[in-house]
Length: 93
Image (cartoon, rainbow, N blue to C red; front, side, top):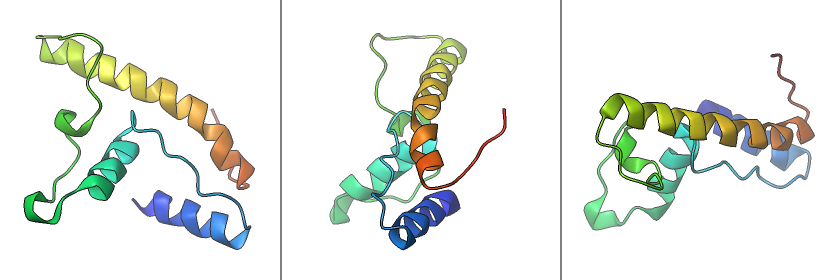
């Protein structure tokens, strides 16, 4: 979550909008979990498949399910990188 704080501070200092972290990524799912939590039902937790958005179809095999979630997260991250580059962050491939 440190990169979220750093991106937020960079956006604030540069008078830029806060980047819209994609929910399909681990950070985006954690942020969604934190921001949608109800005080009476909140339980702190680490990343797990239960906080990611559901897949389009049921996958019983956990390995395949994890692979699909990872592929979706990777695609969402690739679409999200330009938002961080606007803040002046650079990434190497």
